[in-house]
Image 1 (tube, rainbow, N blue to C red):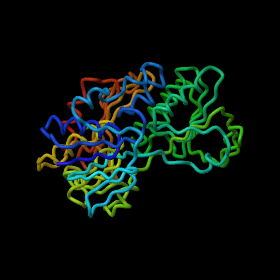
Image 2: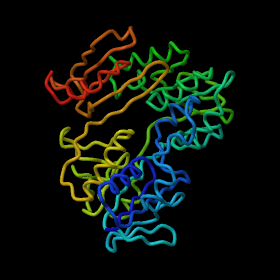
Image 3: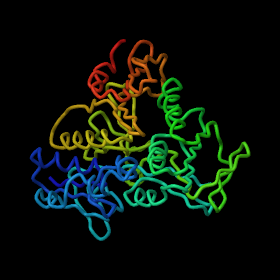
Image 4: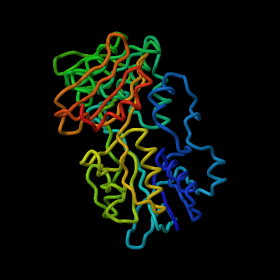
Length: 382
């Protein structure tokens, strides 16, 4: 059986390992668009920006692993097209046949045209090169304006403040992380960043950006910067799947088994819009844990497993002295109640989001023994 994996990130590397460990002895090719070995992305906005990790410390496997396991890893190589009729992937001059195909193409930063055409120094964070370049702008006397108060924006802000950089975060909503956490818990993150010297501009609209990096807000404020960092979300890299004729809508549509509309094709990680059997709806998750576990699960299904992917979404963040883990998903239906255990002012607490008595999500802050208990509560009646 010939297996081709398109994408060279965490999901791809974990799928390859699972395939070999599961007994796949046939051809296995990974088309990795970046020049690097597949690596993990969380350190890009955490350890690498903080100077606590080396660039090569986050690779999933070393070069010898791919040699030893006869994985044909082609770095710096992108897939140009997929032909479902012939069961082939074209990459440059090569045409690769497949019996099974895994799409692990990930996501890309959503661009802000106002920033891109301003002529100002603008940065997005997605790759190892992005992280290295961004860190060069940290330090006393340097000024960052971060547009977007989501996870990436706040993690960059925390790393920059650790290097004594002057930081302003511009967020269009009333609080950072408001859509994810709701006002009850999002306020805690706003307070945290203000306590560390971040200038939070909330309910703010960017009206213009000058070539010198000055960001103008709709309320008339002018924010000087040496670099504008844009963190307004990501979008799935699903162009290849769409062009091939696969069902696509905010990512590659896959069923409970992570199988796409063509049964030979699978998707995992950021690009997979998955019909989740426990949540009862589709969900696309852009986090580290999902890339790992979906990559592994897709590999097992390719090898004959007939079992739905049921793992609940999980993500984590580290900001200053705050560490947080979150399990579950509030989803478009929202929640009716938030219950907090412990005192947020103490720096350690748990929070649960309930919808009509059902626990739909839970998180802890600096309570490292809580994760298993939180996971066991999600999906149960409080």
